[in-house]
Length: 273
Image 1 (cartoon, rainbow, N blue to C red):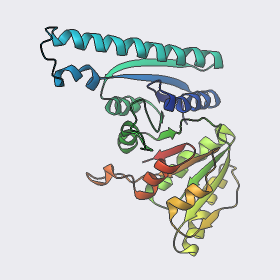
Image 2 (image 1 turned 45 degrees about the vertical axis):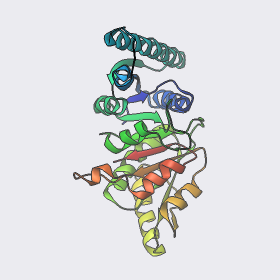
Image 3 (image 1 turned 90 degrees about the vertical axis):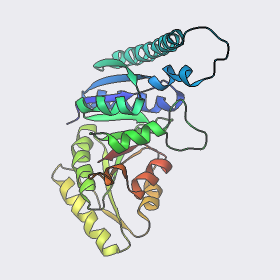
């Protein structure tokens, strides 16, 4: 059951899709929506790394001015989110914190069931499909993370990529009650070089979902899993994937399929570690 959703937003255009989707989810699931804005401590400390020449203004004054500007910006964004949530009848709370955004988001995620944020942020490098903050959050969050594209499209179907791995099983278990509560259609898609193996996995996933009253024809394909999944996903499909995790090294690895999907997806992607 998803009852507390953490929405991390920097107020930028790429984050607007996450804001809208998070509010819709909170409304449909009757969950509390917690808006989070992080004053980036790296910006506050930036003057320490600049050559100020003959300027005699003490560095603490610059720090204070930058922090105040970020505070005003954050309060404005959170007030906008609060007004929108209240108009929609959504229970809303907010947090204004200071630190490295990815680290703060992951820390705050400890008291949430789901994290929602945009794939890109305000300082997103041109040409990159996945921002650094989003990537770090997905890799280290203790709870599932939903990454969204800039444009919002209301989800109509959960498309579950199922390969039988432990993360994929956890993703399947998370997605089933979510589909019921949201009233969404579901499709289980398994991809393997061995078509018989793909068909077996797809049936396994469909069998589990049937216990939730969710019925569908399981789909099995051959080829590259990431490419087949993205080909199957439309803008209104919420793609659900399991990501690799566990161990001092593997916890930093998403797996090629997950990372490729995050960078190339045309719709939102829910990652369960």
